[in-house]
Image (cartoon, rainbow, N blue to C red):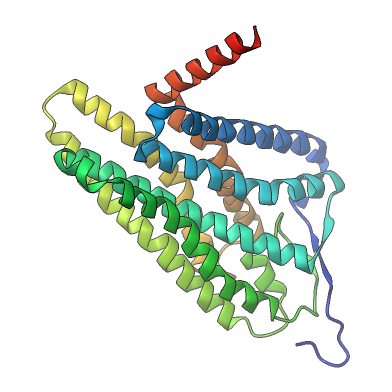
Length: 313
């Protein structure tokens, strides 16, 4: 808590990308285009998977969950980023800041666990194709879709309460474009060791260990693909896994480097760029990675578009 001669702040000042203040108009419209594209792409993925019966299989059910997590992650941040960019800095109440922190962390770890479930699905499909149908049954698919959402939402309550209980008396300036754990800890005026420890544990169990699992899965997948004798089957197996692997690479790296060691190491500018990569760029390119090289997604989009045209006539 604050001392008797100190005042507890009721709001914070977000600086955003103040390093590029002269380019704020260009950045605003660039961010706006990114956001509109991201919403359109992920809503299309969700609509296609939900409306096309032939996409009601584990691979696409997990893809729909990833699209939902992408929407939650970016929509939680982007409106405030647009405001910060346009105004050159803006205030955010403590309540809004802590809510943004909670939903950001939840969406981040949901993405991590959904990507892990997708890796497990690809591992079963490529390394154990004969047992795939019996192993990846409806019950297992439900659990792999449900728990990546439930676990972070429940576990993050403790860390968020710890953040709320910290005092903020020295400075109210957050050198970031959203309420992330690193800038929050930097301006806290009370002991932050509990939050750092909780954040470290969350990152280890919900990001680092899943990342290790994904890496091991893909070592097995690549080994299995190499052993496939048919070039067509080898190409098809690689095609279904390469898009997921690309999404994994752009997501886990920034997450682990930022959150396993909060405060210290990287500069605020470096952390902002890493955060921008996984909060905006990754959700933007994920639908492109999964749709541009996926025949089933393209086919579903064509059918949906044709039905819309016929219905409009």
